[in-house]
Image 1 (tube, one colour):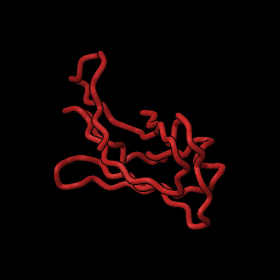
Image 2: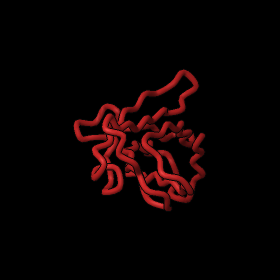
Image 3: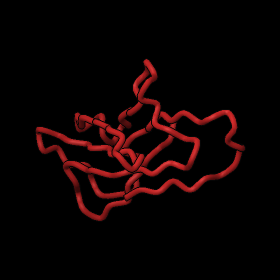
Image 4: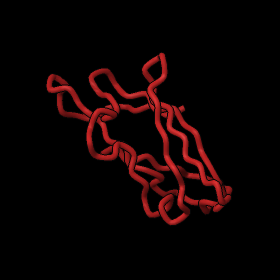
Length: 99
């Protein structure tokens, strides 16, 4: 699971971000388990998460809340995303881009 956090100065109701994973890593869309998991920060506000792979291979994640419950400002983990890592990928640190 890959934790995705947000450092925000203002309260937010929803969010959208695109994740670009390194070569050999993909979102675990084909897994039976949830591939997007809320954290205490989004679960307590009843946020709904959705995800789709875009044509360029990036992964768009959208978090919405139909009751306009706000996520407070701060630096917290919003969600955890399941990823698959190919067996040929070496152990190490990799840059993951968020747009």
